[in-house]
Amino acid sequence: MAMIITLPVLGNEANAADKWLAKQGRISLRDALGAMCRTVDAQAHAYRDETDPVRKHAHLLSIAEQHLLFQREIPAGYCASMAQVLFAVWCAVFLDEEEQARRERMN
Image (cartoon, rainbow, N blue to C red; front, side, top):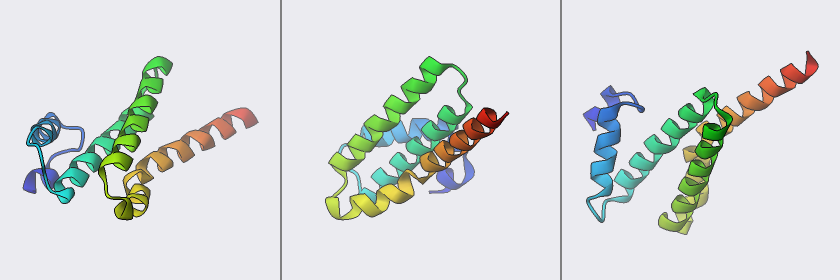
């Protein structure tokens, strides 16, 4: 748990830990959600910072895949409420992008 608090979400150590965790087979729902939250957050930041349209589109495909995985793996009772929290960072990124596009159209 200390690693999660002290290392950046996009850090190599955190990514390596999540990859190791994914290889462990059955893990707790808490650990799975933690890894998924870090992955979704990292993807949103990578999308936000990407300037190449092709790579930006690849990030969108990746988050769509994460969302489908989330729906398939998380019990239905938790899925809807957790999705709002888990994908909130993407909503914020998209709202920022829409606002920037609106400002550019007005200029």
